[in-house]
Amino acid sequence: MLRALRVQNFALIDQLTLDIQPGFTVLTGETGAGKSILLGALQLALGGRADVQSLALDGQKCVVEADFILEAEDWAVYFEEQDWDFANVTTLRREISPSGKSRSFVNDTPVLLEALKALSEQLIDIHSQRDSAILTQAGFLSDFLDEMGQDKSAKTQFDLALQTFHAAKKERDAFVASLGSGFDPAYTQYVYDEILTAQLQEDEEDHLREELRTLSNAEAIQSLYADARTLLEGPMGVLEQMGKYKSIMDRLARYSDLFSTAQEGAQWLDENSQEALFSMDRIQDQLQINPARLLEIEARLAIMDGLERKHHVRSISELLSLADKWGQQLETFADAGRSREKAEEALLEADQALHKASVMLHEKRMAVMPSMLHEVHASLAQLNMAEAIVRVVIVETPEYTPRGKYQYNFIFTANPGAPALPLGKVASGGERNRLMLALKALFARGKGLRTLLLDEIDSGVSGGTAAKMADLFKAMAKDVQLIAITHLPQVAGAGSQHWQVQKWVDGSKTHTRLKVLSAAQRVEEVARLLAGEAITDTARAQAQTLLKS
Image 1: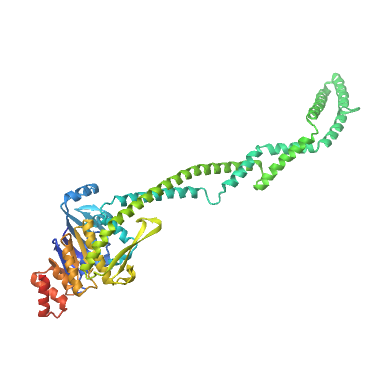
Image 2: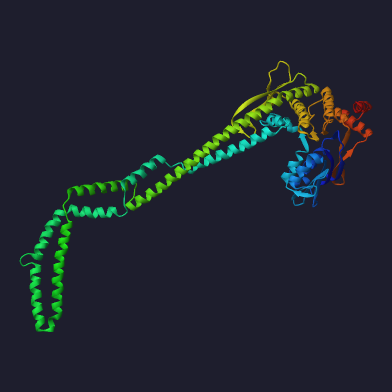
């Protein structure tokens, strides 16, 4: 329960300390007096957005504190988990420096703004007039049914299953993307196998081309070889002449040392002439005219040339490099393929688990729906809408959403015999407000909230309906602490505590304050709501009647 609100230097509020009682509190004031300012101050303490310009800090720090009464049995464990100090009177505090820096506290412990908001959302529900538009939003009713269901295990299981499903899908998609859009595994395997089948060797092409050149010129080689051999050992050939020359040099050397060098040269020429003949004989032994081998080499080189042209390379070395690259790609593909299969299996399992969790969540919501609709109709009857029909249409969505596989939408009609249509198409603003009020009454009980603040949810309501709305407010206040900002005298008269927002000008500065009204002051304020600024005795008498009812 909200116990107190303290405001310092917030917009037009210089200083404000407000003690808040259980039951039903109403807040009234003239248009522009500052009711929205007070609401903004409370929302700031609860973690709302801070607009430094609208705060008009003027070099001073803004401080807003909200005290809540908490039971240890409900909250001690939560505070321990957050590493906060627990107190039965827990203070949520927000500070805004003149520079715009924001600081948040829970019982004087600095906390992140998100942590402050998470706590406050469990303590108080604030509904403004414009919030009735959420009735037509896709996810509103599913969230509402989850809150009404009390047992949150189905939603928790679904959230976990959805998280697992998205993770599995992301992993599967990553494997698919890793293979690349331009990679063709079939073609790569084909060209890779083609090169492997060719059994290419690094230096093979050079050796084959040399052998081809030799075999292609074998006849010319044989003819030239015969000529060369004749020159070497034929009549009057090189060997015979060198033998004679060496013999002459030997004799000359015996006669004079002057010929010793010439003798050595003759010896070298003779020996090398003999070696030249031996070398040619060895080559002759190796040289064979083999047409079959020639065809074999030509066929082999044709394969190499074809592969080089096909893959736009100039050597066997480059072909082998390509083969290495393709082999690595195919290995990666195989590994990725195996991983993808595992990812696909995991995705399938996650999808099945998600489907099961989605069905369970839907069944939980369907179990709650009849009693919800019954109570909503009962509340609408209290609000002069006994003939209204509220139903729910259920649509299965193409994909899973954070709220499940089903979408729940209100259809509505306020008039007997008229078809029920989507709420946003047929319900007026006042009708939507009354429907939202009926849901809020149910929601407050179901969620276990202790405090509910309604900001002009009675807008668009008057006459007898206003009186019935006041009765509903009083009934709600038996279950929750209810604070209502209102313009309706019937609602204002139903409150157990009455605040009035006042605005005044001091010199050149405008101020806003909040006053707790006495019984006599309440009569005047309710009369003002009835009659306007010109308050009559009749209005006062009507006000007294409302306050006594």
